[in-house]
Image (cartoon, rainbow, N blue to C red; front, top):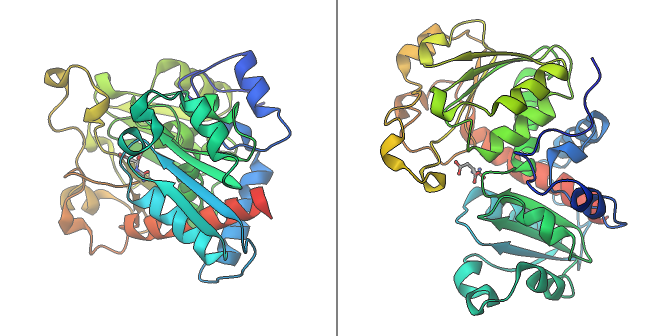
Length: 323
Ligand code: NCD
């Protein structure tokens, strides 16, 4: 089935002409998974596998600026590690809301205009959906969305695809159970868009009704040929599932914490016993109890390997945008 051109709005947030203007500029920005074709993703996966463990000085003297308005461990440090391994240099601020001129009331666009004169690429994490798209319209250098509120997180999704490809060999035909907070989880929003590029993909969406994936994204996935089924809890996880992709409840994005299901979907040893021997258990991390630590020693637990793949994928991406 043909893939509709652009997924519904829970992705990059700002729609219509803004999207087209920002994404069709001469500078290549990475704002949404929607911008990537299957050929792009396959090429990035192959390049990441080639670059893993190596330190070729491909970006010697180039400067990456990291602007993080929200907390981060993996994304910021793996981007920094990737740039340093490629021989590049890193500048940035990790608490940009307090330590950049945003604290004085400067607009995001003005900050980006200035920082794009100091660097060759900008990596932006922001608390508001649509911020990366807005920022890209003001940036003279490639801008990479490292997470925009509950919108998207395309470089995590690329890391996730690299992990599935490495653990399993291929993406085509994979059956993925996406679990946890599918409504607010930006990694899920970007990952489903990349999975839709492959054939024979089926998704099991495991979440309580209040945290389910938006109906318009499910409808778009079905139109793109992805089979989607829903389930309310971890009882649905069985030996037909190839990949379990667990996520954290995004409490910081919820106005009404009292209405949040306390115990969403939990992966423990009982669930692991029901999964196939070849299953792969993933999580973008951080986890806060939704995977029992007893699961960590199971060889099917791939979440720490997944976090490490982030460096190679970001090397491939920086090389693609800058070399
Ligand atoms: C995620 C994020 O920031 O969206 N983490 C990550 O980048 N690896 C997931 C989360 O915060 O739950």
